[in-house]
Length: 167
Ligand code: FES
Figure 1 (tube, rainbow, N blue to C red):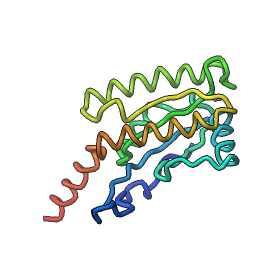
Figure 2: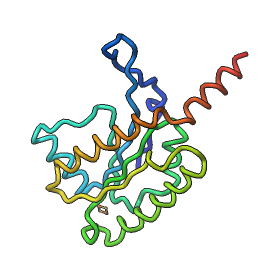
Figure 3: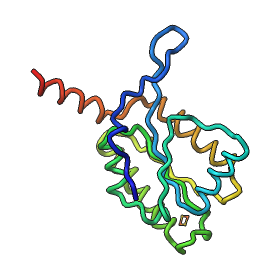
Figure 4: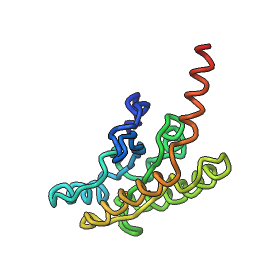
């Protein structure tokens, strides 16, 4: 599995808002299993359904392959929100991968609350391969939720440490 790379540290002030001030766009990573989730994403594309451009999709064979460390590393690297997208319960091509992913996601959500990053930055959804609209809706929902929370606090911490090192 390929994890977010250096590009994830880019500033995410991408466009100007109505007042001319930069409008903040969160950096979101969506881990999608290569079966139902990726098929739903492809179907959304072929139907020309749009989802926010700030979501980057990382394909994984099954959500069961996503470890807690992969999710935590994303936040550590400054990602503002993470979405895990797997097959419907009972529909995982590796039998119980999505059930394991659900447990891990729940554990990481608790951790995020404990360390003050907020569990709302992490979601898991289960989709079938025909749920293109559900795929798009999930993307829109996490983007809106994260916009409401603001940037990942670890990003600000990193910037403070960088500027302290420069003094
Ligand atoms: Fe889709 Fe396991 S193959 S979640």
